[in-house]
Image 1 (cartoon, rainbow, N blue to C red):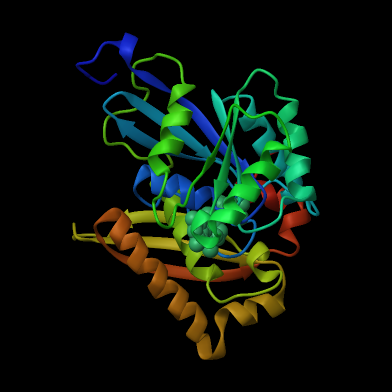
Image 2: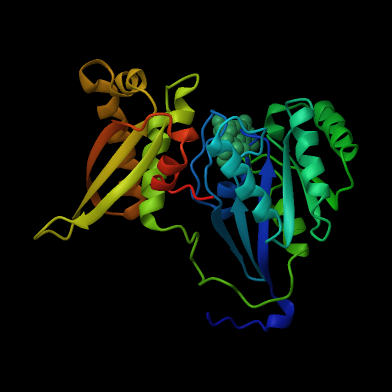
Length: 306
Ligand SMILES: Nc1nc2c(ncn2[C@@H]2O[C@H](COP(=O)(O)OP(=O)(O)OP(=O)(O)O)[C@@H](O)[C@H]2O)c(=O)[nH]1
Ligand SMILES: [Mg+2]
């Protein structure tokens, strides 16, 4: 455990999770609160596929945020697995942050989630109206009202992860609902995701850039090996595999004479080097794992368990 000068009595620590429809800004908000990129983000819905923890350190508190995949009516076995991951996370946290964007009408998807949250009776739910920089004051006021009519919430807070406005308020209302406890993680630790997972996610994020339609959902990445180059302490060799579901998708990702794959590789490498603070050689291969989103065996191989 970590040495802190304050006594446990005036220190709070615990878990909050962010839930909401896909693409409402959950991961961006977690990253903004943590102050670094823990989870990848993209303009494509269903970017997050794991419950990723980011840790906010304050002198009076430690807030562990669990970012979850967007909750939606699933169309594939992967979708079902992700939804059940979210639902099991709900029961394991001290407070739930239900994210609804300021710039889209409250709809079916939000009501679907509000119903699921109502079933978790013991845990307080804070509604977070995200992306407020994309809405006018009037729109934000109307959205706060619309959200208040969805269900009973402990609080409703508007925020913008982009501009940083109200980030401190979101942290405050979540921390208010944490138990008194000594810190759960070492000071300075920002996530407990293994490096290999973060690296795989950065590769997937780079691959999501510029692809459309169903393709973003079809991409999965596995990092097979990460090891220092023999005889060198300044270079890391990373062997990774990208999977898509069909040969036609493989052709798109590779691009004309391999141009796209090369671009994805160098974009990912820059991000990985920034994360690890080391030079990186990235060996990135691509294979077809036919219809992996619907195949229990392939899902297991790609790290999605039931
Ligand atoms: N302008 C603006 N854009 C935002 C804000 N928060 C998120 N975004 C954008 O919204 C898109 C989705 O953000 P994510 O954080 O990936 O959304 P998510 O809810 O984690 O999505 P899933 O993981 O797919 O469920 C990205 O293009 C973000 O840049 C915000 O506060 N302001
Ligand atoms: Mg996300």
